[in-house]
Length: 70
Image (tube, rainbow, N blue to C red; front, side, top):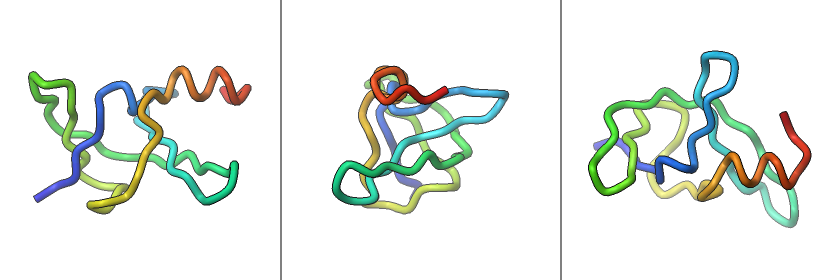
């Protein structure tokens, strides 16, 4: 069984898919993931790069804009 994440949590950048995971405090890590099929309820399967139970930022595009990341 693979973990899932909200579709909005996945950011496509330079032909790769990324999520942001919290490191504690106000620190976050951008992590490359391999995605699988999306479901009709707004979630996408994460094939690799994220373990079950790990937290991700729910809206990657909004987060990266607010954090000044590209």
